[in-house]
Length: 239
Image: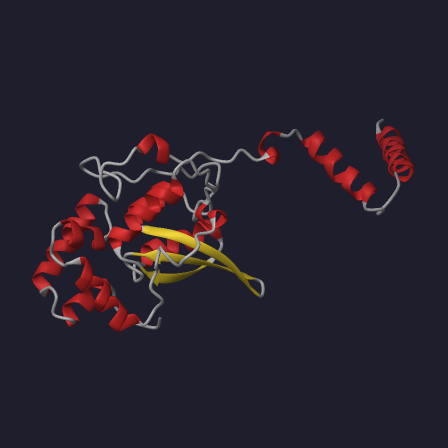
């Protein structure tokens, strides 16, 4: 998908909207904190059918078909519902290409570079976008995220992780979930609590030593003998 420009440029090129309409939609998107495709569709500036047809003609990407595409819930867990809802996208499948993980994602706007960058940054995957009909995508997001537990990994883009705050996305008005009046409580994602976040340093060391002993790297007698040597060295150094 090597193409300059974004969704708005395609729609202007296809004569679906005018440049002035596009500029107004971009300002509204910035003011509301929502993707451009959301403003274009919600305000009726472009129809869903025209949008999908234009993207297919210009990008030559695969098209997401919910009746023939199996959604891998492990892929869904990679992206929190809040992010999928905001950017109007659905993770479909994770693939391994050599040393690189690839995440296939159905998107209402496969040219949304901000959405792609955010997902690639948080998941460590390369995003492979598919074109999706927004109406089908809304239902698919709702059904696949209901009750799911997703990974939430905060990775500050720079500075000390202990000092860098993670600011929530805000807008001037409360935005409804993509797809209409959904039960937000049922869709709200919950972070996975990893054992490494609650284990003490001593427990972590014990876990590593136990695994090494089980794998035959050394015996417990050898380990305890080495501990005794280190303890004796430490006592000899004390004045």
